[in-house]
Image (tube, rainbow, N blue to C red; front, side, top):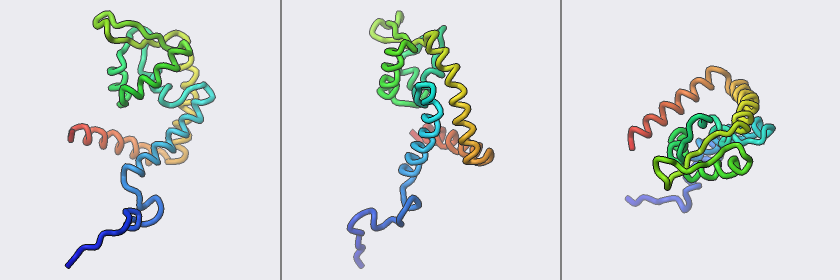
Length: 157
């Protein structure tokens, strides 16, 4: 008895979104959700990534790129790409880390604090759209699944 493999992987999957792998479904959902937040925050000149970065920072304590990446559950190179335009716009300042002269600390400036505060309304608007589209119960279930899945995958490493 011989096993015949399909000529291409797509022929073995049913058509449409149901046939996508888990990673593709998560990525598609992530893009849709990011678009909702980006549209709401775009009125304030921010993307969801930039808003998240500003929300992680304080004016009283600087953080290194690695620490920011950990807080945001992001890659350090992604955080670096978010920092540069915000610093150019004067929303962040970057200083040499006094404890490690090779490192840099990122601080929230007063204009950054003001932009974050103003953009909070956009973020809340996106939250409202998410709840409207998913319903409160589904949104809570999605948050639980995301948190639980993240923890389980982190433990498995």
